Image 1 (cartoon, rainbow, N blue to C red):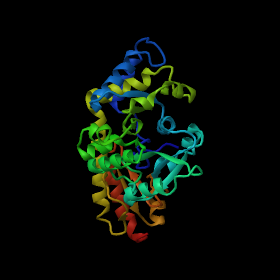
Image 2 (image 1 turned 90 degrees about the horizontal axis):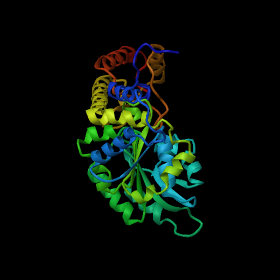
Image 3 (image 1 turned 135 degrees about the horizontal axis):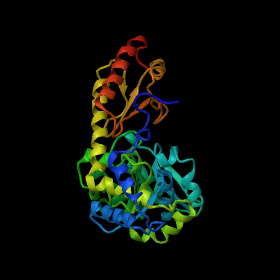
Length: 350
């Protein structure tokens, strides 16, 4: 079924942005070595190093599940555990991939307001037991931006990094929407990664305008030892790697990676402001990046679906998640908000 309008279900619904498309087209015009031994991949890795202003190891994978699973597996043994928020994507939406690729590493979930881990609960989870029967905590995984559209501040990341390393753990960051967090914080990428104690970042590209592909960035390069073998074994070594790498060149050279995120964030801010004007709609979480979480009557949700709108209503313990993309327009937002305003009085509050 094809929809005639842009909707708010996911930033994965959006197409490829022009900068990524043109870079991919350029890489299609020549023969180059396979399996990443090409200049496009080399240049993309170097541009990521320049972006983060540090030496680091960079690998490209097809999707976020592979990025998270393989990077976490490289940080753990099967008897280790990974601490994450109970709403984290690796807990709720990876179909056990973390456990599978790590050979059984256990996820230990903690709470915290607005999708962010509570430092006190991290300490409790680490200290609750130290006997051989308990899966030894090894990694803290942070989601930036979180699954409910909030962000960790620079200071929060620094504090968590210091706490985690002080407890002898490593820090992994699921950055599927890392660009949106940078656009919101207006900081340098290094400020919420390696300078704040992050050892490995999964830098999302697909949700920000790429056709496919994420970048795994190892700031702790020791953790990247033989990671190329792990990628190959997991089916993540692309034979035509240039088509994963070249779009990153287009995004980074032109600044589209940040521009796209800023656009998505701005559209979400407009959407939030319009929905707050509607009495029957309640905003569930602080809007900080490109998503708005709203509580609406189920019949209102169904009525919006009948008009062709699409959004998820099962993420983050219910409510509607309205996700804006790099190509979401002001007209899209205003049209959706107008439909909500028209329909809402029939059903009242949720």
